[in-house]
Length: 201
Image (cartoon, rainbow, N blue to C red; front, side):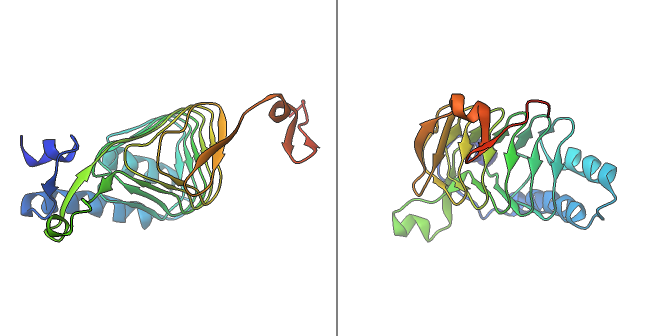
């Protein structure tokens, strides 16, 4: 198994490799170009993201600055919105569905290191993919850890640390993040406290 295969399979590997660093730097150069664009350069931003990401759908808007370990392991669906300072530690694949929203300062992390210190000090790491399904809203300051899957339609409250899978159709928050309740009928009528949704909207 070569180094790139180890990166994407959960195996332990040494991340300090000359060829790996050269390849990673080439993607970081593309990311740098994205972060230097002007607010009026929407089309240019889209073209850069097509070069950077493994996949990106239609009508995606990412507010710079964007941070990524690679960028090339990100698979993004349609109509994704990310506020500023989205950080994608994408040493393994990050799968982002359609209509996903990220608040500011969200971290999606696929990389980790062994607890055992004699191995860790040699810069050994492993990676586990993260999946965020359709229609998920990730609140500001959330950290999503390796191997997590967040089910469709769910909402992750601001400041959460997501250490395990979250099912579909729930509101979850906290550190560690846990399911608080299911999305229900009241959510179909009210959008904030007792403020009713205008059905004409």
